[in-house]
Amino acid sequence: MSSAPSPSTGPRPALRRSLGVVDGVALAASSTAATTSIAIGMGTIASIVGLHAPALLLLAFLPVLGIATAYARLNRSEPNCGNGYVWVGKSLGPWPGFLTGWVTLVGSVIFCAYTSAIMGSVVLIFANRTGLHTLAGITLDPSSTAISTAVGLVVLLALTALTVTGMRATTRFQFALLVFEYAVLLGFCGWALVTGDQAVSLSWFNPFEIPDGTAFAQGLVLAVFFFWGWDAAFSVTEETRKPGDSARGGFIALFAMLGLFLFASVAFQREMSLAELVRNGPQALPYLGQKLAAEPWATLPLVALMFSAVASVQATLIPTARGLLAMGRDRTMGPLWTRIHPRYGTPAVGTVVVMAIAGVIALLAVALPELSDMLLAAVNAIGLIVALYYGLTALACAVRFRSARHAGPRRHCSPSACPPCPGWSCWASAATSDTPT
Image 1 (cartoon, rainbow, N blue to C red):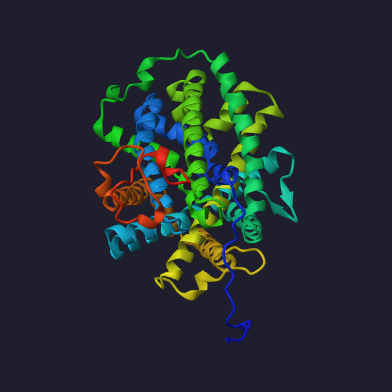
Image 2 (image 1 turned 90 degrees about the vertical axis):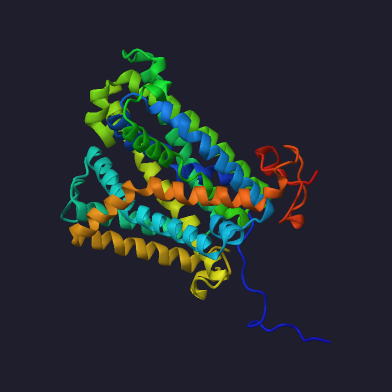
């Protein structure tokens, strides 16, 4: 007879399954950060392709939808918080998997470091509008990189604490922010559609009217970046009560983002001329608020932008820590990343370390202008990084389920039969199903 296990040999803490479809939608939508993408990206994409943003957003959605289907099918086969890193590694080999994992992690950490200063700047702008210009003798200047970074890091620390103490509370917090953001977006964009004096043209939806191939390619990469983040729902698949809920949450968020992006792009172009869009650039959403409404209502788009930045940074921390957890389980990374908090059921140590690394990079960028320029260049190239790891994951799906290419579109089987599985389809209708047919 074996003796009872001692505390040192007992089962190790595991990720806690407490999430559902709504939590996946909240996480995916927060990570995609529609408000931030609209606020910063609409003016930028207009400077590249003029008034053809709706066409490029539609084109960019098509490959992203195919990749989302690949994610859902792979998740149905093998739910894993490491998602692309694990799936690519097992289907294409360890080196492509290692590349997928590191590209994703480095891109996410750089995004957190760079966005912390932007988040701090938006908070300071909001504070100034409410009449708060100094605090403890410190001038709250949004144009000061040092002050903006310091405020952003304080917010990042608070978000990390919330993320560590439980995923359920985190997704509820993000859902509350999303409700406010989307109410403001829909309200102001709907107002712009009604009152705008720029005529809507079908040419806005025709990508063939973009005369420059280079501009088309640059705009398409930026449009793909608009959708980046929906896959965050798959990073909590081991914390979701049913693995299929991760796919459902990702798909719902993805289609919601498409609707919001098209609605906002048409509304912006209805209210603002091309020159106005280009001139205002990353301030297009606050500018729209000031153009349509008087204070205090004109500040609402700024508050929505602030909430979006906060939610997107927090939603980036979550998949980054879980990707490192998966790498630690494979011994690609050290055992530090596999530690699960016994009370909260989250990778607490890994989340804190990721936050610390992003904070150090942000502080070094303040002290070293060359590093700041490198961060900006890296952020501008994130669209290519996203396209790389999305493409590798889609290729992994095609390789893993290549034997199903002659099967019917709805025929699939149980996860235990894969791989290989001669009757498994990669269609979304089967991908999100939890029961074999």
